Length: 171
Image (cartoon, rainbow, N blue to C red; front, side):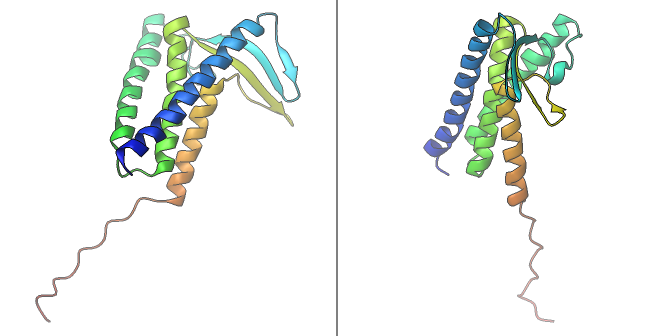
């Protein structure tokens, strides 16, 4: 894959994810201040999550949350995007999956830097099943991870070929 094509495959999903995530979080903060709204299996409610997925780590001291969920995520995102841009042997599916996950991580990181916590606003309930509260960044991270798994399943890494026998000597 040439460099320009790879840059587009990283930039488009990454920037689209950040844009959609930040726009929907802005709407959630402004429109859901009056209370939750339910439409079919979806409930929209504004919540601020100082922790990670499912509020893991929300009770940690603020300095530790900042280190784990802000600084380390920022470093991981920078290294991850750099690796995506440098991976000329990666498939387009792998590249897009990585860009979706990086875009979701960046969307939540922006919240942490701006608000000190992540804005969540969607709950899905159907047939006795209920998710935790989440946002578009979480959807992108999950979609990227699933796409990555599907890609790995459909294109397993090639196995090293056994060494060829030396044909210069005859037995």
